[in-house]
Structure formats: C-alpha cells, structure tokens
Image 1: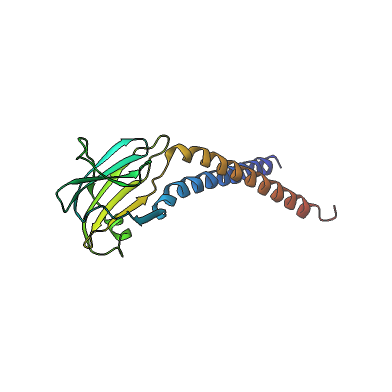
Image 2: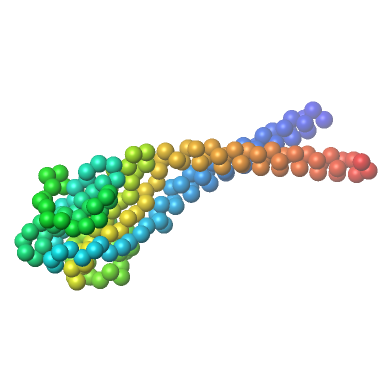
Length: 191
C-alpha cells in the first residue's frame, strides 16, 4: 500500500511538472516563432525627383532612422523612415551610415514590387525590445519600398513563459485531482 501511494505521488508530480514544462515551452516557442511571420511592406511617397540609388541609412536613436538617396539631379534627399517627419527634404549623406545587403528572406517578402535594383537592410534600435529590421528596396520603376520585420523580444519571453507555465501547473494539478478521484471511484464503486 505504501509503495502504491509513493508511486501515485511520483506519478502525480511527473504530470504536474510535465504540464508546467509544456506550458512554458509553448510560450517560448510562440515568442520566438511569431515574429518570423509578422511583417509589413509599403511603398514610400515619391521623392521630389526620380531616385538613382540608395546612399545610406542613418540611425538617429530609439526607433529613428533616416534614408538618404541620390536624386536624378545629383542632389541628396532624406526621408525619415521611422520617427516624425514622413516627408522628403533635401539633405546630406549621414556621417554614420548603416545597412547591409538584404537577406534572402527579406527579398522573398519583397516579391511583387517589381525588379529590385538595390536593397539595403538594417536593424533599428529599440528600448526594451529590438525594434524591427527594416529593408529598403529600390525597384526598376524608381519606387522605394519599406519592409518592416518584427524581431523576437527576449524581455517578454520570461513573463510569458511564467504565465503559461503557471497555467500548465494549474492544469496539471486539476488532472492529478481528477485522476485521483477516478481511482477512488474505481476502488470503491458503491461510494
């Protein structure tokens, strides 16, 4: 009888721990995978003159970025991709420029905008979580497109895992209680 009780206790603990672990792992998996399916693309407003090429991207601070392009009149035009501006203005090439060639994933997401002549990708700076990865593409028609891809936020993974782990813990306790009740009813069918 004592062996059966200790076996039942160990079995109950295993069920509770398994449900808790599944809940926490579910949160971690969702937190890491969700950003890979979350993105948005849009065409930027037309520049004052046709664009010849993308010159640079300047990161100005938290959630701020400016794009510098070369116009057909050999002047530099600047557009605030993130932040407050939202309009083109004549400017200069930023001293601190960032950007790399676009990743294959970003190029796949940009399909449908026309033939891509040039594409620059950069990670912006977030406060608590990484801000989006921005991809700026110039197509053969001279249109500039912006693709924003969400990034996983490690800061939110732990609280989310704690919440879903707690839900798993509660579910595990409920399962153990139901299993115990079922066992007692099968041992004493008349009660």
